[in-house]
Amino acid sequence: MTIRFLGTGTSQGVPVIACNCAVCTSPNAKDKRLRSAILVQLGDKNIVIDTGPDFRYQMLREHITHMDAILFTHSHKDHLAGLDDVRAFNRQKGGAIDVYGTVDVHEALKREFYYAFAVKKYPGVPQLELHEITSTPFSLFGIAVTPIEVMHYMMPVLGFRIGEFTYITDAKTVVEAEVGKIMGTKVLVVNALQRDPHISHFTLDEAVAFAQRIGAERTYFTHISHKLGLHDEVQRELPDGIFLAYDGLVLDGLNPES
Image 1 (cartoon, rainbow, N blue to C red):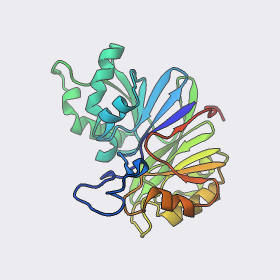
Image 2: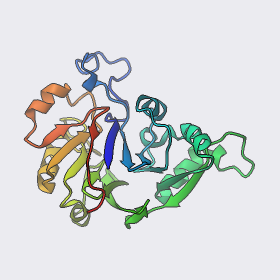
Image 3: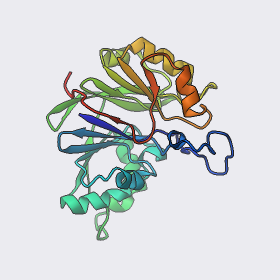
């Protein structure tokens, strides 16, 4: 299994429009962050987790030529707004793309992309085959996927564990039962928004504490805002085994089975 970081930024991305801070004006490519999403490659199967506003560019940048499934963490715009561009993969596949999300996510998709669900569809609209998921594990291409429910302030959000890899974004609190699903993971990805307290995201210190509690061999922080600081400076502060993810980072050789 291979993981590709399509984007590692928060809802505004980095640089932020009209911001002249040191991070937003940094020449370092690692300080340029599209909205958070990853590509999971299981053999010849391509699975995207979240299709934010940058989805089209992310697919072009990574030279992705086919898509087999989409998993959604939650219904916020920065995680689903780019779904319309799945049309290109519909044409390539000759049919609908399987989409996995909660009831709330499906309701949001039907609102935002109403034309894809109309009784009389306009030619060329996205073709989506919706699959409802909960916190119960499910199988995807013969591999077990374990949803992990975290709280984004008062909003439930799903993370996903696939074998020795766990991906969590937009988390502020995680109850003990859900922490248990993560324990034993070898590679953890979790959000670390900024240094100052935030109502719905882990701060840097909270993310470090969570990573140390889980004890994965490697932890990568994502969903990063310009307020966190320059990539290279923050990285030097982090404990061993904890890293800032960046757009285009690839993790190879992961085991998709626990």
